[in-house]
Image (cartoon, rainbow, N blue to C red; front, side, top):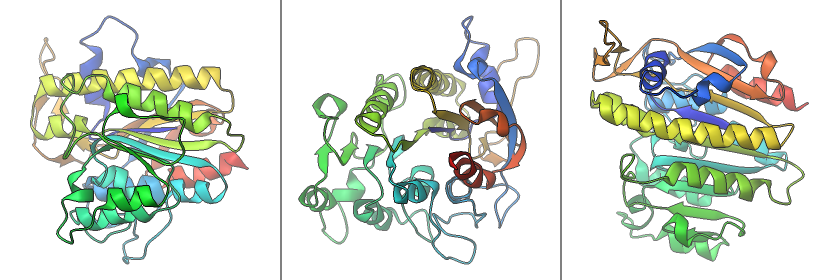
Length: 319
């Protein structure tokens, strides 16, 4: 189970910790380390290259999805594990076609080709559950295709909200918003509920195992907006999700949980005695991001890694 806090590094985690007297989910991990995030083309990565590096094990150029720097499509960890018989899922609070979730399912030279990316998602037979926003890219398209109809004709079960969804079905696509989901807490407990139900569905009557990627997408949005209230809210939501995943892992041996990020956003610092969050940029920064690991094989992951290391490390732990 891989959880990605988009735009999250140590300052974002520390800022959240300062708002609560409770033990945070991040403090439950026995193994921690650091990740270098630069892309092939830039010292400072974007989410497309950062997500692709984590997903595929290849450095690529900023803006590219699921491809190496030579524009050659490469398989993601999700696709490789699907080929080994495992079930797979992706959950996000952004468009499903947004850079990080798309990196695990789609291939495109430009992260902004949302309708092409939606078509990749709709025709990818290696994914079992996809949950997030971005309905417009599937139905309000320039080519007039209705990808939701095509997917349901091909055996998918489509839902527009968690309350309507039947997670006993195979092949679930849940598009809960036309665009990005609302910010937290306006969207309610969408991400924790979606994660819990995805875990339950993927693990049900499944002896071969599963891979699930969950993104706290809007940590990045908050930091681009230099909005500390938005940030803390999104970190609280992500913290709740991590607790759900760690509780699942405790109850299900032979589970590995990794929490990391694609990059840091906002150049966040905590200056002065009050340590009030202060943003030094509205863009990404080049600082390393942390990772946290729990469960089977976690002790082999400590140290400083390239973001391209994760796929090979995960595959090696499965042997």
